[in-house]
Length: 207
Ligand code: URA
Image (cartoon, rainbow, N blue to C red; front, side, top):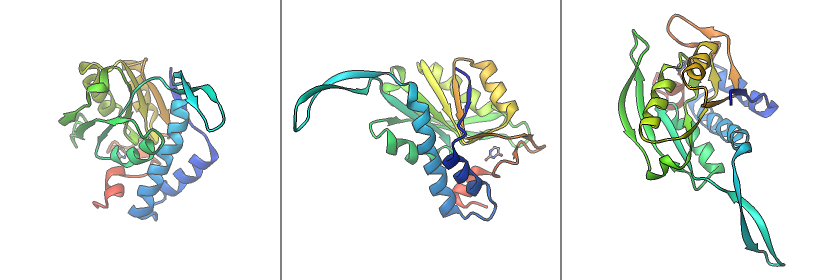
């Protein structure tokens, strides 16, 4: 358990382009999705497998498949940007959604939507939000998931701030965190510095 920063050259290369203010929405969207895929490869490295019998064109053998269901839960709206990349690697995963927005003044999360597949209770749940800033939204999302019966939750994001990562891991030490980078701090508006700006706005071109 703990906080994992995936310092792979390809991930860091793509993240540098994502961060660049000159990167347009189209490229930003593809790159966020691609980094979602690359992170997923690491996230799954300790997943349990089970043995199954397979007949190849040449012979019968016993091989491994994933032993557990996977449920991907993006926090709306920025989390949506990573879903395609993750599901490309785990095509049988189910998808739930949590809608949260940050109150501009208090920075506290307000819940406006939640919907989960029935597999949530038995699955490994990938909670997806690119920016782990204050950690308040992530904490709220974990509370909601646990209230719906989720037992194993892994947080997957792009960039974190130490404050947010500590906040989440102090409240829920059992939730493993995977990020592409841990940045310096939060500014007075709650943005990660240097970060990448407002991820939702950059994904959906709403600025
Ligand atoms: N959400 C964002 O989109 N960006 C930040 O820097 C912090 C929270």
